[in-house]
Length: 156
Image 1: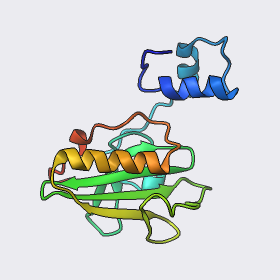
Image 2: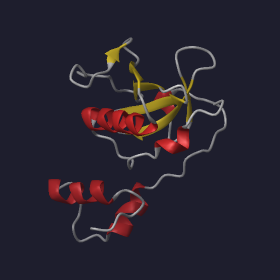
Image 3: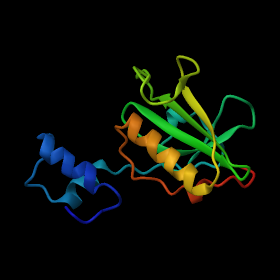
Image 4: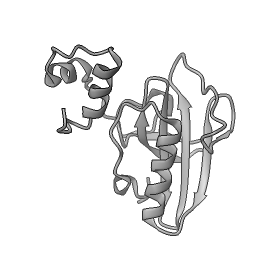
């Protein structure tokens, strides 16, 4: 359990501690039960429908493309980082869920369908820290911590 297996060791360990998991099942069996084969898409889709990390998702404006940095049971998180040190973070509820109470996360409730925040950061390192802080503030994500270098703005 100490070894990270596809980034899920922490959530597997939490399942067993919380009593939701079966401690007699090997971690590999639990992982197989949890694995889903995502449909790889090149077109941006709604963030609420995203299924894998770094997937292209739509922002509010046409041509506004974010990349998924967190997936959860209740909501998905995406961000856009541009080389001009602009970082935007967007959170949307999954189908059948609501945003709930996010007043302590630093995100603005832009509408009942999404919350967002926009930052001016001095470096790529600060952008990573900001995304990490939002992930921790919102919590309840089932994906591993993302590598922000995979979403550096290069046209989309």
